[in-house]
Image 1: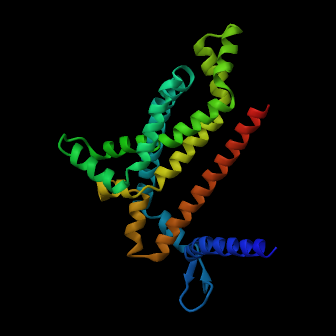
Image 2: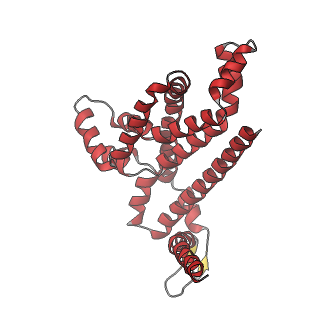
Image 3: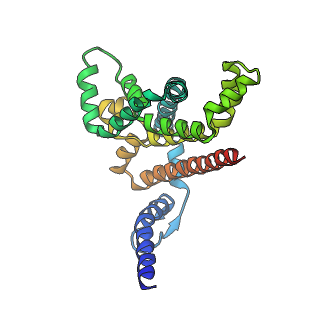
Length: 261
């Protein structure tokens, strides 16, 4: 009992340690003044209104959405079909994908940024396209794991064989049978990839910088000028990530429910 009580206390302290800064940041985004008391001396929507009236923030937010969603779309169009073919028809080559996944995790952002600059700056390639390509490769682990799990959960190979035995062509079996079954897992992986890319800072800042200002670069700039505006940006980011997490959880539950059926 004592050990469990100590474990519960440790867990509670850990939760407070992790959650308290987030709550304080969110409160500061609505605080009119917070200098002399534990809680804000007043609440206001002024900082959020100021933020959404700032054309620079709107443009930075749009760039982040465009860059992140573009990388995810390319990954879905290029990487997912390749994973489908390898997992279903050439499983012996799957080890090469797993090796690529490990290599993605092994390169820190700073080292990757320096390497990309040294290689591609000599060829005149727009660096934003270089970052986009690096993003597509960077989300390989999330796309691969989501796709692979979805295929394994529904036993995709037997599902395709059964559809073809009943008279469906390979294309019909793939588009009308397999994809509707596994799409919740694919969509969850895509949303997870989007959330990871939306919060990425090191690569885009070092390779492109203020020439393509995203939300994270905008946030870094505002940290030195206005803590309230910076907190408002963090609040919006937390809300967005919370919504994505909720959708991912629902899709994952839906995928498991379809598998059980």
